[in-house]
Length: 357
Image (cartoon, rainbow, N blue to C red; front, side):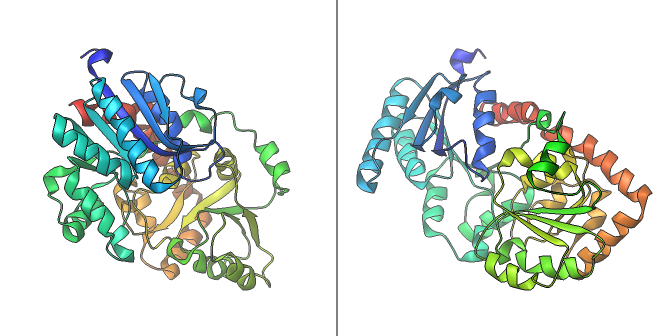
């Protein structure tokens, strides 16, 4: 099938090159996919230069901020795109675009794909999401482990659900200037670091950080992120000298901070497909993580030994990995090989297969 016949409209809720959330990774992925597809991009909110999307056929950016006008403008732009014979709409976390695109699709014989990858049902049923899932043609999520949750809590047919993994650009983990990272964050190259990067919230395990640091005084705990638990965490670590709060960090620094660390830990109580574990693998960094969402599914058999259920088991895992060089080297080796299947170029092909296969 030629590029001209593989037309798709990708809907992006926000475009901000300085963002520190998962949207950062979407921008390069869109450029990569657009090499092989005729891709039109609709951006709902933007504060960055859209010339970044050098491979995209055309970029539409919404102008209105007032919700009623945004909804109307969004519908008109999607209608214009559909009139150019774009029959596939791929919407990333936008209820407005999902609703409008679904209406246009039903009236014109097009298809809608909606990306959602999280355990939303843990925090109460999202009625808006439930409506969206009834309207769309396909829900796209990252791991098989989430399928049953969407079926059980939102009544969506399992046949409507498609699986597409998250991705990373493995090239980001080559030729890292670790000296620059050490200097930028005023870190000592002789210290042994255990790394955490996430939103500082209880649902992401921020309340376990001090407990783990207390029982591992020989290691420095590097904590990157911000959030509602930050002030509480500052109180919990005030008497500890082995916890370093880095605050918010740019995504581009994650590979370097992982490279200078010995281990990554993720005590999250809610996850879908945690891309940060792919980054840990790509950095050759073993990890210990809670058994939640798709964590076990995306991990190697060897790494699954350190997918645990509670903080006591996490502490045991940390000590075992860091005290046994054979275990450490094995985890590093298998993770570096395993993560290759999640490289951006490999997942691009899976995306194309999902839409057109």
